[in-house]
Length: 424
Ligand SMILES: Cc1ncc(COP(=O)(O)O)c(C=O)c1O
Image 1 (cartoon, rainbow, N blue to C red):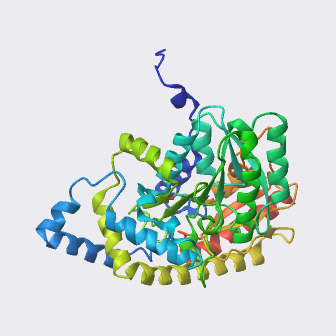
Image 2 (cartoon, rainbow, N blue to C red):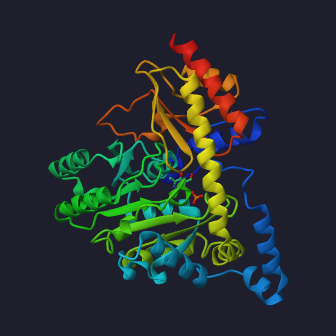
């Protein structure tokens, strides 16, 4: 038996569920995947991307620049356009010094930003607060780095502030605040629940974190993951945490063009407090010394020609329709005890079943669904392994992102049949 000299990080890193969920969705013909967060195939910007590529490659000098390495921080023009767009989204009341392009870093999807920030702020044994439930792929990053995740309960409009205070108080009592580095918040149409945190709540969260900084002996950051912000079905999105008082030194904003444009053109960005940005740039330089320049140029073309915004309108309508279709099917086929959050954007519907129903990977429901070619994300994957509480086991995340319309209806119908069979 060979003993491999793997690092502690390698040995700690469990097989991320995202890998097998995505693999299964791609490799099993006939499978209706309501699981992994793929986006809608039919609305991917094929024409736009072809035209942008042709434009970029038409001029030899532009083409050569795009086919060359860029800088670690990313294309200057893309940073400017991204910072200005973010300021515009947050509204004229938001302080303009927050949105300087110099504070913005282009990354390979927002996933890379999440990884970088965690790597820059945390050592093994440190603590990160997460929503309960949260984006399960992020839990993998925490687990891999040997970090402790503490779950903070959620309400219909975001984090439960009194529970956040309790968790912080408990950390203070146990003298563990020094190990607490930040709170990770998926603030718009959260993955997995679809819930959006209001600006008022964001302000209160920042205030609360500040109150415990003295005891922590360092700033406690707020990492705002706005991955689904652009996918609001209608109207304008609420301002981000960057618009809250005191955000400048505390808020880390992770944005992305991946879900709202093309997941295959994986460009994201982060807006960071100055001191943290410098460290993140050094670490990113060691990772890849810059995000693919060609992909950045495609995005830049999309953003500066307004075709990004035009495409968004198409996407928003499409996802609103698909969400409606999924909700109608749930209403028609799921048992009466099922409860769900009606999303106003994003890609997900979070369903809570009756107490005795089990949704986990080993549950008869999951196995029956798989045998009948339907895949969902078991809710328990989205809860941090927090020894201070037992997570619910009767929830599921359903995505209306990639499945075609008839498959959404059929998939939910089959799940409904499975639920009746198993809970009878
Ligand atoms: C909450 C959340 N954050 C970040 C990401 C990463 O997206 P990307 O790296 O494509 O920007 C995802 C992807 O599913 C997500 O759901």
